[in-house]
Length: 190
Image (cartoon, rainbow, N blue to C red):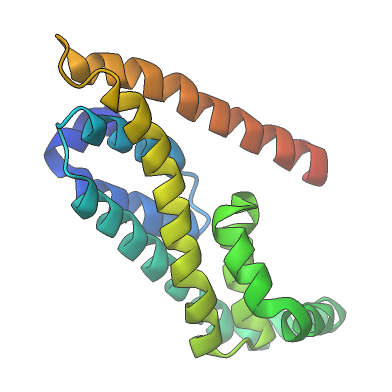
């Protein structure tokens, strides 16, 4: 994580886009931690908020879309588990857009699996995108905003970037611990 965070000042938007893309494909990357750190660096004036937000939203949206389309393509293979797929299709038919939207920013551990379920269950692509993209924008805004507020308190002080990271890392660690706790509580041991 520290190696990735060290790359933020140099590759900020691109790094966030790549990590967000991979996270949405269910690759374990500390994207939320990086977003909070990037927000803190933006708060100190070391990064620009708009490009890093755009990178995160675009990367996450492309990752969502890729996972959705991959699941749609693999749907015939998934039909071996017909009962599970039928239940997923019924759920998506009833709550599809709401589930996609809320899994982007409110219940983020469910975001990547929801991409695959929505694709395999047949949610229409326009409906998926209408729910996914605004949800990703809220997700990025929440994480960047938390880091930005922490970073602003150090804006004109000596070694502001290091102090902002010192605040952002524990905050990001708290997000990560809550995520692990939620996942363990609802899905068993990680």
